[in-house]
Length: 234
Image 1 (cartoon, rainbow, N blue to C red):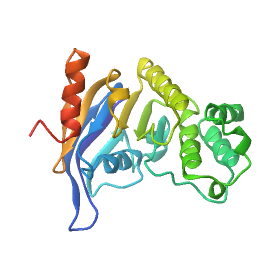
Image 2 (cartoon, rainbow, N blue to C red; image 1 turned 180 degrees about the horizontal axis):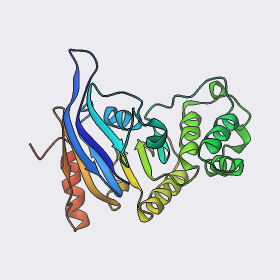
Image 3 (tube, one colour; image 1 turned 120 degrees about the horizontal axis):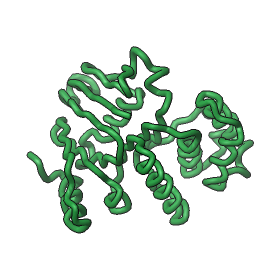
């Protein structure tokens, strides 16, 4: 269940270098990806999911290169982007039916995923007929299908009501217990602190892996908040 980054660099044009020579090894458990706004957290998730391609370096998922062996690399991956991006003309049901087929699940799995977010009554609607919050829920519903072993979540609680937030946190906890590799980016880290087993902080384009977090929940919270604000380890 490993995600490996070897000398990964990425920039948005020559003038905007975002990530530089990142080498990490992330295994089972929940990793919080922390750092100030604009530090490159969402970009690193996009690179991991294969949405963006590194300028240099390699990312492998369970030994499969994200660009040279894409089908195998993506097989067990679920990705929730910060901004939902779906084809505007397909219905929610059509999109989830496709995900079910790609993951070898029955179409009933898509129906249950919609029921998780109480979206079943909108299954016939096209994506362009949905509010931004509903689109985000539809993308998250796709993540629920099957048993993903690599889960990438960018602001997973954003725009969700309290009940859904609790259900999402239960879902994450279940996958932590089943030894999935989970990476979470969130402005609100409090709900994820207890489950987090390690953290990665991005500062000035460089990533630092903190494998051991304090045992005390209070010390762990303080430590992670420091990282989120750009403190430590530089």
